[in-house]
Length: 150
Image 1: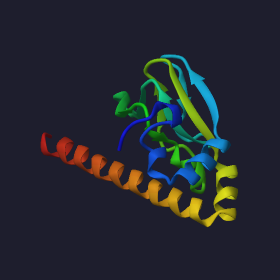
Image 2 (image 1 turned 60 degrees about the vertical axis):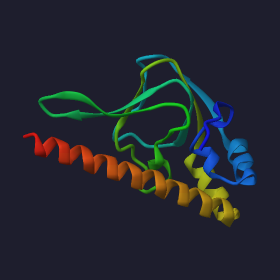
Image 3 (image 1 turned 90 degrees about the vertical axis):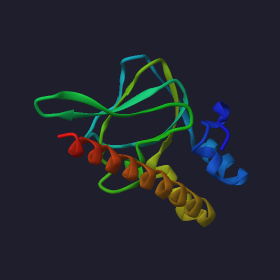
């Protein structure tokens, strides 16, 4: 799918034009400076984010090894799906690698919109499932690599 930084790129292009427009009416723009923490693991997840510009690192604190990058994300990547899933706690740290602009949609407002608009809800949860599944596969491959070289 083509990336379009004006609407947040790849994640939002998964939606029909009507649902894209509705999502964008719910979005706010947030700016993070290079090196700034955007999300901390265990904190309450208030927003679902889509990277509009810049790059981010999704990180985890590993005992005895410190903070480790799990993956990086750039324009079009969706972050903090946990804002839509109870108990709504962040599952990793996210740090801006460079100056980054994101679209943020409040999880509660998005859930309300899904209850009012079943097409939006269907498209959103289908897109979230695709993202979560692809991240699960990537994590599984990382684990295979870690354990096969050990």
